[in-house]
Length: 471
View (cartoon, rainbow, N blue to C red):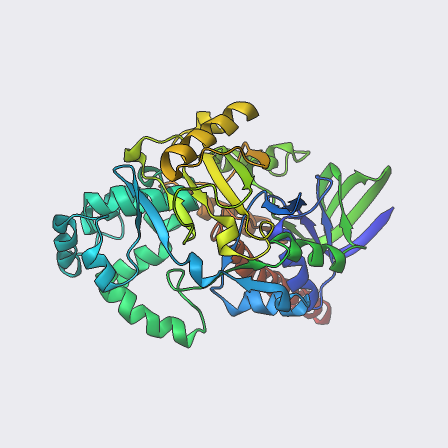
């Protein structure tokens, strides 16, 4: 079966599906192929005995109007649900106890999470000179220089574990936290930059990640995937195995098998949204030159462990988002989300849903333990931290052997190499959460930008062809 189209998209995670939507909106016809039997990548929602289980991302931040554009187009904007006010508290463990992360000046002065020495250290921050822009720092170096060791240990370290499942020493400020890097380089200070940058974000109709609202959907994050799958039901091929890939006179040719059939696709443009480790499985020599660079992007293993309990089994009120654990506390988990506090319908009325994450760059060996050991490990931490002694009614374990790409120092050189590859191969576009941000919101924003880039590229190519014919 031969199909000629405008864009072939390889990968049907949120990046691939959202890109397809924005391409279609710009008048192009995309065809999507996915090796798995279901779309969505790590985004997967399931209801088990009345508990709503998120196997991957639990939520994302409302940082851009592009998200609302997508959800309005899909007619699911009304299904969005913002986090409950009761989940505003974020807890950090220190000396075995959970301390609320201070959200204002008064709370910061009164918190026991940081010593007075650390609080006074902040007064120096506006007067510390920016780093040399030609010298790349890791996040730990950046924070030690500007904020001090306590903030590294009890704010940044647990934050990085919660977002990247990573280590501050292994993440680039410039690539992994570009807003922090820009604040220092542009304003000379994080505090000054936060205040002045708020005006610029307002002009762009964007919201900072620090103040953006957290949201999901009433029936979970897979709501968006299901709507996108329905939109492209005729042009989405699942359980697809790519057999060949080569360049033709008018673009690119790709053959794949799916549902017992062999398909041949031709298109001027190819958009790849697969994780970096999937490139080695692409047939032929076309992408071989990319492999050495892509192999430098590390994905640590992370395992999600979901417990559903009758009532509230903890010896404390679940009055927040959950908690994160600094490395210095020597626990076996990274942190726990109090899922049933954040959004409605995550557990039967009056019951409790908890989602715990294990492993990451901090303790990769823990993520690879057998299921029964992971359950026991999480039970032990929940007992010591929250006083939970009851057995869960529901227990779900989801390992992700290659979970979240780490933006290590030198990451920008990899991105530069990818851009050079794209320039040498017009019509090839490379996307995914290893480029432009790891969150669902980041992927959607990048999908919109990539669709515009492909549209402009195609217009220029066609204009050039018309001029050649005229001449």
